[in-house]
Amino acid sequence: MPLSIAIVGAGFSGAVVARELAEAGHVVEVFESRDHVAGNCHTRRHETGVMVHVYGPHIFHTQHEEVWNYVQRFGEFQPYRHRVRAMVGDQAYQMPMNLGLINAFFGTQMNSSEAEAFVNSRADASITNPQSFEEQGLRLVGRELYDAFFAGYTRKQWGVDPQELPASILARLPLRFTADDSYFNHPYQGIPLHGYTPIVEAILDHPNVTVHLSTRCSRAQLATYDHAFWSGPIDAYFDFEHGRLAYRTLDFQPEVVDGDFQGCPVVNYCDAEVPYTRITEHKHFAPWESHDQSVVYREFSRLCGEADTPYYPVRLVEEKAQLLEYVHLARAESGVTFLGRLGTYRYLDMDVTIHEALQTARVVQEAIAQGRAIPAFVVDPLG
Image 1 (cartoon, rainbow, N blue to C red):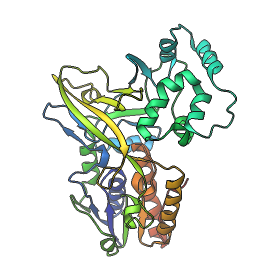
Image 2 (cartoon, rainbow, N blue to C red):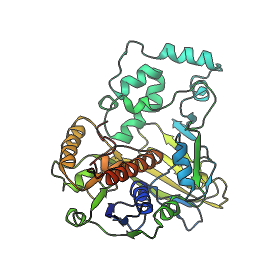
Image 3 (cartoon, one colour):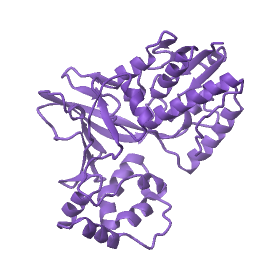
């Protein structure tokens, strides 16, 4: 028997679950508070003709063949390899940290094995179990590289001393002793030919799905459906009963310039005295296009206020304790499943969001078929 399903949020999480349940025969209504779908992946054509990533750049990369095949059902992707440069003083370096950066920074001409031995000699081997971001950096690359490329940038990005951040943040960043300057190493990488928004629109384009834009859906309204999915902030669902979870947000300072501004998609500014974290040049996210003008964004990171767009969950000790309180509330709630970056208070790449949404849809359909209760979380937000 078809169920009536409500989904809050029309980003990738909500859209994928909506599509999967609609194809299974259920009747789905999607509620999106913004005037567009695709969440922070939203793209649009600027008056210059440049495809702009409105909420900052999004590069699709994944190790999951299922996810890669899934998104290609709904739009054409162009091959794309992301490359980043980092400014330290007035010098630009390749990122992520690789053989080219090491040689350029130290003025050497080492080969791979020599560079690895050299960096290991600079690393702080006395740190055997790094607990903080700073300890992880010093253990990985030593004081010179850490201070130049990580310390200032991290303070600007997170607004706290790197000693207060967990080591896991830096542990995810690659260190290579080859000349490879491709930012990601996943086997499947690309950017949609026409942007992300048409992809999400196509996912939601099903006769069993109705989308309501610029529309909020209250907790009371959700109770009128057989089941609901919440991909908005988990603390907002519970009316901030245990306070607001902390996020970092981004402010963008856009500029239109003639010609080419920086020659690559992203330049990080590592020096603490430079107020912005990076400059993105959007036409370079679509290198198959040609434009006479260019759109650049300077990005500034700060603590997210009540009216701001949340980007990065802070997840320090205090926030983890708050999250635990909300997880307890969610597991005591019936008729709603929490998912996605905001619903589980985790930083997720697009491919992981889609992977978890597909997983959620499968678990939910099995629960419905077997007459079992649908869980509040398919993926543990505390994991």
